[in-house]
Length: 285
Ligand SMILES: NC(=O)c1ccc[n+]([C@@H]2O[C@H](COP(=O)([O-])OP(=O)(O)OC[C@H]3O[C@@H](n4cnc5c(N)ncnc54)[C@H](OP(=O)(O)O)[C@@H]3O)[C@@H](O)[C@H]2O)c1
Image (tube, rainbow, N blue to C red; front, side, top):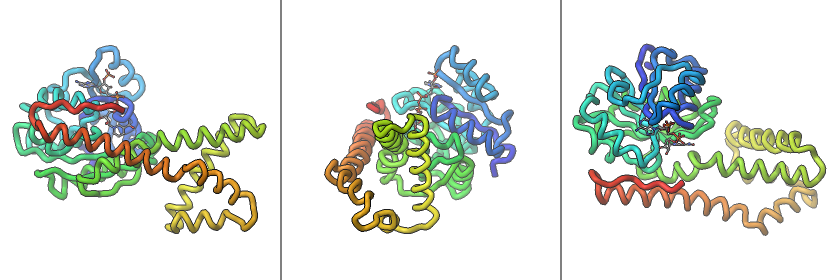
């Protein structure tokens, strides 16, 4: 479905670049079929050099004649960018938004025509083809649009469809999630350093252990608690480590971190819905 499709990426920043790199690596979209925009002239060189795609600062020119328009600017820039392209976007195009907290309703309200909109919440491991993306469709999105969006994000990782009301939860869990897990890897590596293990080896031990544990959960489909029990020998060392984690409230801390991030996203949605045509989503990452 993606073959020959022309893709415009508005806002080739960290996430936009990760997506384009992932798509190019998988070979699902040809380099000459992707073009991107940025805010500053000085960012153009970065995109041309790192991605080898056509780059510009003119969003209206960028979206003209493209099949898929991927909006990857910051949430606070969405209103301005949508207003800019509203007149040139047609219902024959598919708009995909990845902006945290920006609803399909927010996007639809700013476009002039009944344009199909899909909201996606990916994460940065897309760059390695190991991303996780949740998807939902707006008012005018048909099955074919959802399948096209699914294909884009399947090229760079796993996908799930969810109800839009759960998107803020996804933002707090899997979009922000890599940051929490980097802190855990960093902390485990620090522990290794404390115990005399060279930092590079300690980081490898921690990161590969996290990758292995994640694969065990995904591939065995067993409950994480059962997998934990397998590691925890009675009167062994792991149970002592787990006791420390319980005392340090790791579980509740992680739960609260995700809930807090999701709440922040939800607050922003409420602000937008209160003033759908005039409000600027305010984002505090
Ligand atoms: N980062 C993540 O892990 C992640 C995960 C899920 C979703 N998201 C969402 O992805 C979006 C981008 O996040 P990010 O982390 O990639 O931010 P970022 O690195 O700041 O990238 C934003 C990009 O948008 C460009 N831009 C700003 N105004 C523009 C305009 N008017 N026209 C065209 N381009 C414009 C910027 O250009 P310059 O480079 O010239 O300044 C920059 O390249 C956000 O909405 C975020 O919620 C991010």
